[in-house]
Length: 81
Image 1 (cartoon, one colour):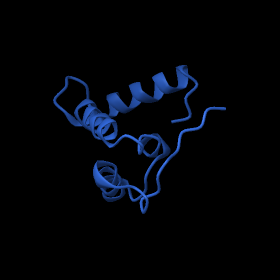
Image 2 (cartoon, one colour; image 1 turned 120 degrees about the vertical axis):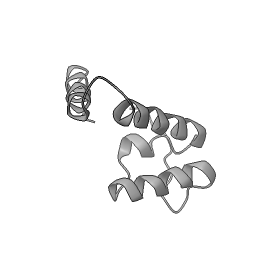
Image 3 (cartoon, rainbow, N blue to C red; image 1 turned 30 degrees about the vertical axis):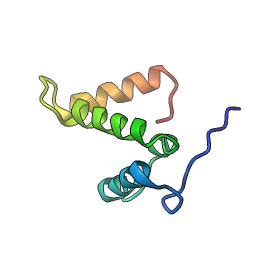
């Protein structure tokens, strides 16, 4: 099984710490899909930015439709996230 070092909220620094703090403010916790990116804060920030635009940006799809699509695709890919 692959292993990627992940940093706790207390261990993280720089951009990764900022993104973890933002995640805590948004959701009250840090989901594993976010925490796995802690070794590379720049990737973490870019990923969260992409997610924000995809889920909350201007679109012909409603928020509910976007969530449904994400859920269906995750299920088709056997992804537990």
